[in-house]
Image (cartoon, rainbow, N blue to C red; front, side, top):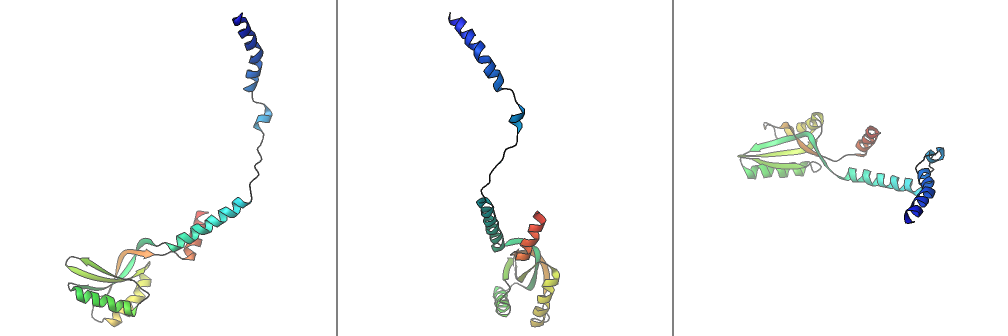
Length: 155
C-alpha cells in the first residue's frame, strides 16, 4: 500500500517538477535596475579623493641631478651642501657617501634641459670646479596637469 501511495504521489508531482525546469520566453526577458542617483555622487567624490591622494604623493622616477662636489673631505662636502641650500632653498640637496668620496648633489629634474639652467648658475658660483649633470632616481610630485594627462590616457 505504501508503494502504491508513493507511486501515485510521484505521478501527481512529476508534472510540476518537469515544468519547473522548462524555460519559457518570459524567463529570458530584460531586468530593469533602478540605481540610486547617490551612487554617481559617491563615485565622483571617491574619484576626487583619489586624485588628491595621487597629487600629494611623491613618486621616484628616472631623472637628473647636478653633482656640485666630489670630495674625500666630509666637512667640505657639508659646507658645500649648506651653501647650496642657502642659495637655492627651493631645491633639495643630497649628500651621498660612496667610499671613499662624498658627493653633493642638488635638484630633482625630469629633463637634462631643466637641470642645465641650474648647472649654469652653480658653475658661476664655483668656477673651476667640475659641476656635472648626472642621471639619478629623483623625487617627482605629480602636478594637476600630470593627473589630467593620466585621466586622458586611462579613458
